[in-house]
Image 1 (tube, rainbow, N blue to C red):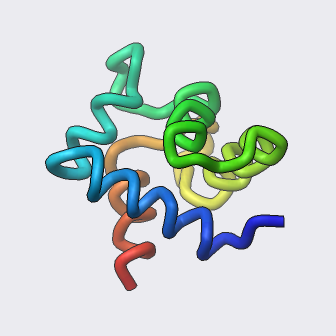
Image 2 (image 1 turned 30 degrees about the vertical axis):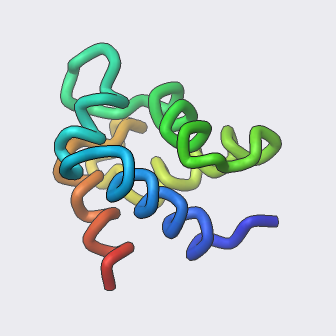
Length: 89
């Protein structure tokens, strides 16, 4: 199974190679423009990052569990940025 570091690395590569900045990446995947990434939107992000379809739903749930600090089962910009800051460490 894919490791957390491998998945976060693929997300980092996607964001740095396909977008001018993290804000552009977040806006691209925030399809409904509500300022938060839903599980469905995170699954799209994982697909674009070439995470296996077999584990995308599981990984999306784990990302939400790990980074959604306000309990709304979505990832806000601040939570997304916190995840990116963790990737850079």
